[in-house]
Amino acid sequence: MTSSSLQSSPWWRDAVIYQVYPRSFADGDGDGIGDLPGITARLPRLAELGVDAVWLSPFYPSPQNDAGYDVSDYRDVEPLFGTLADADRMIADAHELGLRVVVDIVPNHTSSEHEWFRAALAAGPGSRERARYLFRDGRGEAGELPPNNWVSVFGGRAWTRVTEADGSPGQWYLHLFDATQPDLDWGNPEVHAEFEDVLRFWLDRGVDGFRIDVAHSMVKEPGLPDWSEDDRPMQGTAEISETRRPPMWDQEGVHDIYRRWREVVDSYDGDRMLVAEAWVTPYERLARYTRPDELHQAFNFDHCVAAWLPEAQREVISTSLAGSEAVGAPTTWVLSNHDVVRHASRLGYPPATRGLGGIGPRDEQPDRGLGLRRARAATLLMLSLPGSAYLWQGEELGLPEHTTLPDEVRQDPAWLRTGGEQVGRDGCRVPIPWEADAPSYGFGPGAASWLPQPPEWADLARDRQEGVEGSTLETYRAALRLRREHGLGRGALHWLEEHCGPTSLGLRNGDVTVLVAFDEPLPLPAGSRVLLASGPLDADGTVPSDTTVWLRTP
Ligand code: GLC
Image (cartoon, rainbow, N blue to C red; front, side, top):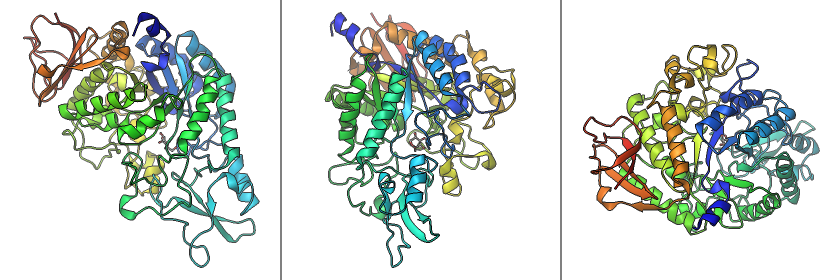
């Protein structure tokens, strides 16, 4: 790339984007639930951290049955979180600080409180109102059986039967998630028009992009065929191929929607972008979402699930870079988010033994020290790679999962719908500790916090780490600065075979050499200068196990 094409290359290609979960980031009014004024007040801290953008999970009006992923009005702000004026202020302040703003759009389903769904219930079978959703007659003599055998991602069946206006048992509607999240029918042009208008509503307010919720689910196979018992795919596990395509995920028609959405965002100035949350594997199928006339990015969940082992890491990095390059898109690395166990805890188990699902008090507990050490090593590996990267709020503090939340405070519908069989995602969503000595660790002005914060979090509070050399916070900050200075996000990766083996990886990106010691220490190459290390090096300069170093080599 020439320097002029570097200049003109759009921001999102190498951006580090910080995910804010409005309920849990910062509480401005002290009700124990985070809000937009709280976020706005803390934006300078994110600018100081050195990220390029924030992505906010939904803050729209919602009964909050799935923490806001059940939207009842796409063009307003949930009163718990503030007002539209607060959203405008947040966007303006972020821009002033040089931060871009990405918001969430939830197009697969609405809340059952959305005016469209209320109208659908009132209007009855065959109506235009019902045609916006996937209502079907039941099977069985009296329609008493669900229309097919699909199950909800959150457990239980994916269909709920309604009672018609005259009190009789009626049709069923599809919900791939909670019963209060009815799926829209994307075969209906009215649905397309509505969402294009919603995109414009927020683009007009100045947002820089959208994260598309369950972007691989909107189109279903015609006829909604049964899906075999053994192969019922859950989000996160759907292996998709031409011969084995689940009827609810990754259907060809979704790509037409995104071609149209691309035209909408491209009609605005300022490099607005779209990123897919699509749990699709193998990587080539995911990369199809980022073809030149579709979305700009898709979260790389293969990277998120990859085991902390040299061969697994090398494989996922190489496959992702090649897969994205084939369509001319950047890769989009991610280690944690609001749906998966924080990587500081996930990596506290023997490699390849733990999936993404929640951890509860009755589960084997992770090794916290080891988990944090590996998490920092994994983060420095991620931030050394070409492409864009997403950070989940609190990972810059090294926060672990809250693994001992009492049952009675859990709110995740996955916990509720499976009767506790799935622990759910509450453990990664606990409010952020800002100040060690303040009530609620500075999350809000008082002690209230919608989920309890563990007492050990005092030591992880931001103010305890600020200015402390080697703290997780300062390590992230240094990594983001160096990544920018050395142009790592726009660089190219070369494996250093002499450092790649059963217990280590080595790579070069531009003028930076990156070495990762997995479960054995690694000697530093002679004459190298350490730019940054994910943990303390041994006195003789050896890189200890589970540590990543960034070096200048002669
Ligand atoms: C996405 C969200 C998740 C939500 C689900 C249903 O996976 O990330 O939090 O529960 O979609 O909207």
